[in-house]
Image (cartoon, rainbow, N blue to C red; front, side, top):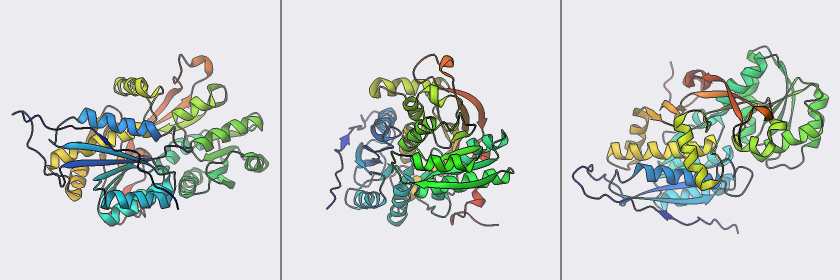
Length: 406
């Protein structure tokens, strides 16, 4: 029998001081606002979210302060990127443990499962980790917000840039689960819409260590572009082993369709240089991102990923909405979250659409050459800022039941 251990509760005792300047106490159902961070603490996505996600959420709680006059409590658990574990933990947290909002849920498969529980239980779920655009499409519900990025935005960023630069024929190395399938689907739509062709795919298990058979198939396809529809450790291993097989030296181009700064740090600039990628956040983008990154680095010893920044941003907006609504009632809080524009130093101006898509700018970057980098984590140069309305799928095209047709 699998043991589901919820790694210790972190109470952050942010009680009101009772001063005249403090706002009236919010009507909190059990006198505690409880946030559950559900993330990958030990597997291939742990560098992308993991302990850094927990710390980023703690930062948001501390920065929010005592604004609601009640204690804010943080609990955490390892979802292991498995849908059944996500479902079990979410159901227990929402019902037995009185968790008000879950943030994270790691892989698209586990996140889609948690979104289903959130919809059934009518509780808040802030999906900061997953990529599948189905979260605001056919799987949308009134209690889920998809925060950082999605497969549609990645396709409209990296996929569009590569095909417009001449990469017309594609072959995919695809993680064989919900995320990889959605990413391949959305990139395929962009490639074909721009006159490109898809020559085939090779689907690999999540958390693979040996990509040799898949890379041989990619080479044999003679596609101009090998699209990596995977993430985390799978992307790192794909790129490293592609170098061993001479993929790029042989004239083919790699397209990293979901790449994080932590991946580039692991791969190294000699192998990653020239790679184009799409991100929602980069630590060295502006003064606000640098200030956040400095605090994060002091604790974690590495720069934050866009996902970890998303945990901070989502938690902060949630708490501010609880304060503004004067209650932790899920319907009232979700209404306030969607009605209130966002403007934080990490993602800039944005808003939440009716389908739950958090809208903000996306950025097309190119990885620097080793001689262009001045320090560790100085890895990206900005190619283009992509407005959110251009990056993300139009709401009416997502097949979300919350969106009025016509």
